[in-house]
Figure 1 (cartoon, rainbow, N blue to C red):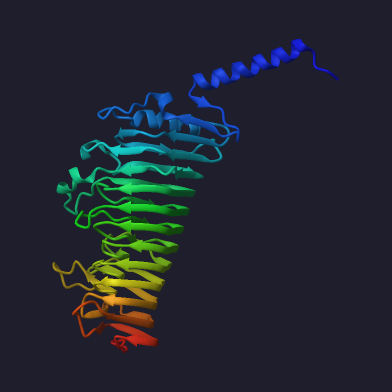
Figure 2: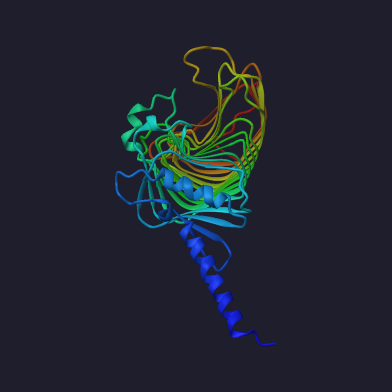
Length: 400
């Protein structure tokens, strides 16, 4: 049955009115039915001294309240912004923050109240992507780093579930570049994270108290750990990371605080470390809380001119006391670790006499001296070891 011309006209006018309403309220139509919230529609400006934090937060709040999938767009251009909080829960099934441009942090560290520049908290199904740059402008603030009062982290996920960050470039964070805490089902991949090798406390990715986190397929070059895995983590995968400069890939620090939780299930594989001060490392504080760290695997790791390629250090920060660590390390495996060592002691298992390490496996270790370093040796204390396959340098026997 043919639709009368007058009816067609009314339908067309309704469509125009709806589109106008959405546009006026900062929402752009999208063929995929994803509502798009451009920060320009919320007052953003590319002026160098204009703080865009409120424009970004307003766009997020509007997207978060959307009934369907929603996207916040930070378009091409340079946008300075202070503290930004993406808070939930959200009505939107999935909320994407697409960073196409260049975000630059406010360089005054006193303006950050939550310990983060960008905080994603208490929300599920968030995707951060877009190919843009997140620049912490740390060069202005590293002089304040003292190891006691941490500088703001560029991006924190806190109490977040089923979320991702990918296809982004992080540069020169004030503190850590990315921190994930109290979260679950998080995927971090296809990231580039860079800061000068002498920049203090600029870990690439730090994890605390999470379940099921994957950090994969990324290039990390900073002044501290490329990836550090703290207490309370379960089922963590770190794979295909190119690391260096920096302090290597680390399980720890563990045992610093009295309320820390057990760590179980960490697999670090198919990574390449170049010129780092440490390689595959587990470290715990000397006078620590009583917790466990178990089922840890470093496998298929290429070391290029790395100091301390394989290391368990249970006397970290031991200059002030001789009290032993109470972190019990068990079932830690180092498998197929190859390349070159910049220090003569290529394998160091320095465990606690209070709770000796158990089930430490070294399998197919093939490390050569870098340059004139050498000959290479192993060192061991308070560890029950299992040796398999190639052992170069000769692996340490049980040293309980």
